[in-house]
Length: 150
Image 1: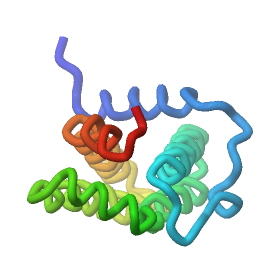
Image 2: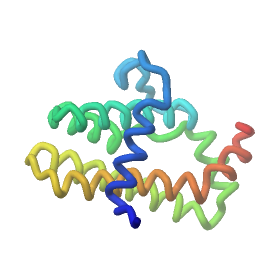
Image 3: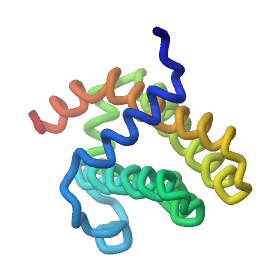
């Protein structure tokens, strides 16, 4: 049986919703001007978890707000950005492209949620999670190694 990409993304999102401890601090409590990559990824994981919970509870307003937080995440602190750029070299363009994909999908998802367009919500959610996974698959190990996070 063949699974649809949207269905697979929704299943992954649901799994991510429950993969980190409950009681995580809210975005506003952890927001920094330039957090470390680890803090940023934890913050975004929390935002994705909030997005999933809100979507699965039919709370489109809360889901849209979570999508907007994902879209508007802060930049990683400058020292780590420079280290990542050195490690990735010319591939930094592709790294940034993945970030843009996630940003654009999150913005479009928020718009679709506020409009009540469930079909577009499913598509944009799949793009958002797909953008995260594509970046992680391609770059996570090298970025972790470059930052000494292994």
